[in-house]
Length: 41
Image (cartoon, rainbow, N blue to C red):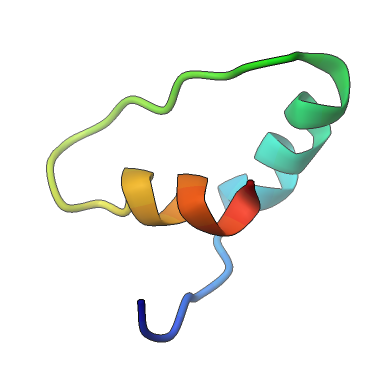
């Protein structure tokens, strides 16, 4: 994995992980769902 540009939504995901045991990332192909999940876990 190369450079990861921190996204605005990352802060929200971080807060959700504090309250929930799991979350679902949904969106179009190629927008970084898998990369975001790998970086934030």
